[in-house]
Image 1 (cartoon, rainbow, N blue to C red):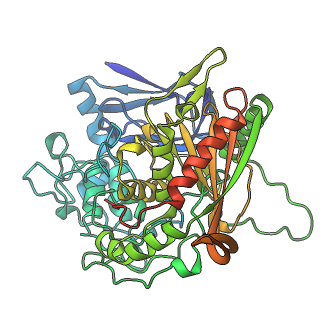
Image 2: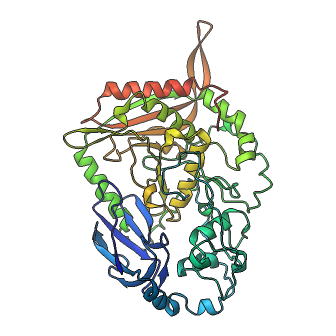
Image 3: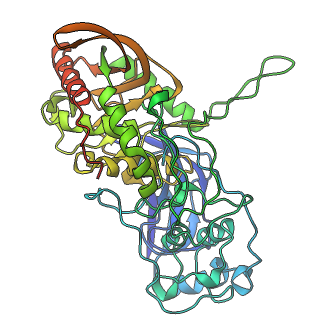
Length: 495
């Protein structure tokens, strides 16, 4: 039986997508959920998995082509015996006879802002569990290992000895999840030539790589941390044997300056998508803005007090973004209109609180979603931020991780911004931008007397859709978020 693979819907308002590149070729054998191709839309760059297991018999739309949602892209033959026969010589070429010695390929270093991947359902616990490896007891060798070309390439990229893997797929086939779980277990510590990318570590695995800071963006980025808040670095846990990672908050690679005249730079598919959506949103959504100033004194002290123990336990630092998201989700329950969507003749109040973060990448901006963020502890949110950001930077986000956002928290403060006016991520109706935490002289009341003192202050800007919200509603929401942050309890559990 032939199954037709079509261009998926990658968001409520997305009508088309671009095939960035195919990860398989005609004749390749794939298992269900194996990645087929990378697709790019505005603010989305993700792998699309196979809906069924079988042999790729036809690729209809090639690399670089843009097509409408629902357009047929490929065909997979799922008829048992016939599919196996077609797959034998084509899908398992000479590599199955005697796979070449693992060739170290420099994996993309974790880029300093965020990044993960795993379950279909939104996480109800702090982080998704690490997939269990291998249920098959058979030992694999270079000549007997069954895996798709994409999985075999992943094995080569990490220099993994195939004999160390146990396949959990049908007939002992090694799946992508088996390889990722093996890497996340720390069994492949990496080398200077072949480091283990943070994006491949599962959220619940003991962190063996340095933390990737909070999100960044035109609407969400990691907060710049005030000097006094940075505690002494604690020794990494014994399990963390990975090499020293690059420093956090590295900016996306800038373009080289033109030499000898002007230079025309074609827009990437992602940049074209961003340009189209931003233009459409600004033309159709009436934006309004409200800014408040927040004294982060208690949050900074709380973080400094807990940072060393948390880093020793979890292997990553505590992000201010996680604390702000926690305050936001608690406040949204009191102001449900901000957690809604505009639908022309009605407003849809969303029950789920799916918080969108923004991740800056070299070719644009990605906006993964923390599903059911209100059900996570601060540590759970913190891990999801790291995980989503890391995988966003290596195009490893799943489709369910880029859909269903209800409210965006942006962190422009990571690069020192103290004021910004973010564009709403329509059909959401509001976006909160947190700016840099900066020491400033402020007036506080001590025992009835006004005194001037130095406090770590942070501006928060909320852009909102004036068709749905008014200044008073947004002002009250921001006042409640500020109240939670300024009254932060030093004993607040991290989870």
